[in-house]
Length: 175
Image (cartoon, helix red, strand yellow):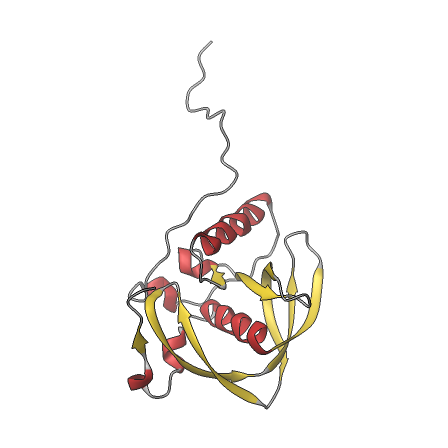
């Protein structure tokens, strides 16, 4: 008996191709994830591996790899000062502070370009985890900035859209 197209090796995760800022999909709004499936969980793993491939990435959103689903992965600092990779499915900012901070941002989809972006210092986010738990959590400072940046991707917004003075954008060649 012969079996065609059967792959007995199953790769656990894979690196995904990151779209750059000229790709039209990055300007589209993402759709909500209605059901968390095995494919959703695999996408979370693949996004996490892709984000962690380089040394400086602190977040990635599904649209950056051409998938218009509301999924983000953020490398967030925990109370012990270590980084945790946090997957958020259908993240939604429920509240944000009126106090804002300006901070430097960059993006995997806009390689080597950085610039100052003004964002609320604190946010409260509601999201689902890959294991289907609903979370409502407050984030401050760096963590809030990373999450807001990635949620912007779900809306078709790039950080360069939020830089008020485009002359403040700069290129770092040794990225």
